[in-house]
Image 1 (cartoon, rainbow, N blue to C red):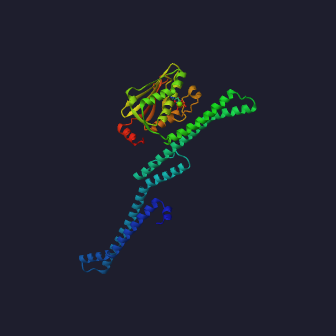
Image 2: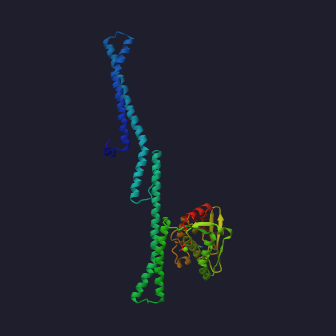
Image 3: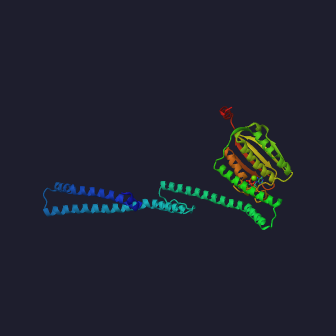
Length: 384
Ligand SMILES: Nc1ncnc2c1ncn2[C@@H]1O[C@H](COP(=O)(O)OP(=O)(O)O)[C@@H](O)[C@H]1O
Ligand SMILES: [Mg+2]
């Protein structure tokens, strides 16, 4: 059958045609055999019973044999045809339903309706697998599309405030309603800086999430990570009146293979959040601990805490707790997203926990421990 014909006829028609061809071939063979051998065999048998027959009687008996053969073959053909139609219908019904559903769903998806799914219609294991694979693909497309939409609308939302402030400021200046003084300069600088930071953050987060972060890995002791983070943030904490301490005990000597700058960025993010959410007089502790094949760097604050319903969201892009402090301090809600991506890129993780509002929060950065052999191999491999 040519490709064009195959396309014109459906699966059921082609299956039925194939069965009819097989059927006709068998019937033709049976008919030919019956026609060529049947009468002479029958004749021989009849003569074995009685050698001499009245010719009219013999003709009648032989006519009976021919009629019986014809009826048997015809009935056989009809019954076989009915069976072929029935079997074809039964076999292709489920297949056709699943294939139709797949075609409709694929057309829906191509029109942008990504919620289209295929229900299993009993077309056999292979078709069910195909329908499952299609549903998986559609689900992933839908998720990607939802993330893209959310990202764009979050981005538009984030851009709106600084842009409209700058716009109002420029209009005020050109209308003469505003004078160029320290105040206007501060507003313009603050909001352009916010736009610049946002652009930088977005670039960073997309690189981090796509795994395009370049890491300059080197063995570092846990205590160095703790003490350098504490040192960098000491002034900011002193200004805020929050006590910052670093503790490491024996875990301080554990070695991790990290990009010290990137990890510093994570610790800075977490500590800046902690100081922002801890009232004066509060404390923030950075500690290191060993847990199996991991080193945990733990930042615990005695501040605001995080409500259970927000805990799952703090690592999402652009997510900010709805407090005046979060909105006014100009963070774009990306700090923790980048921090988690950096932790993941190191083969570690970053998680948050809190006993609830008013009970402080704990952020735990888990990093795989550098094993002794690994560390020796690395040291041996690096040029001296
Ligand atoms: N130590 C903390 N205590 C309470 N809430 C926190 C703390 N750290 C982070 N959060 C919450 O997580 C949100 C997201 O943090 P982040 O991604 O760093 O964004 P940003 O600092 O720009 O607000 C913050 O807006 C805040 O609501
Ligand atoms: Mg932050």
